Length: 77
Image (tube, helix red, strand yellow):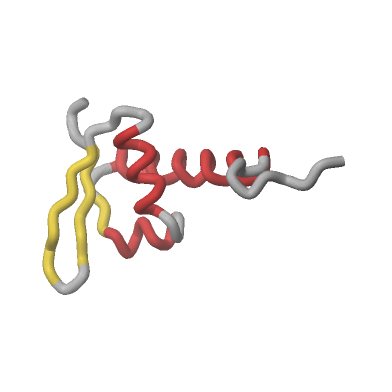
């Protein structure tokens, strides 16, 4: 039996990421969302937003609201 590769995520890890990405997308579809809410949904929400934008082609905009708060919105893509 070979050791798991450090560069290839396990099936369980890919499944977890997919579930997190689906949860972030579902919340974006409801309407604009703040970063603190996304952080409660998924600690690495920034990575999931990046995947949604660059791998899946979603148009996601962000607006800085000040004080470390950002608003994310699913756009027309």
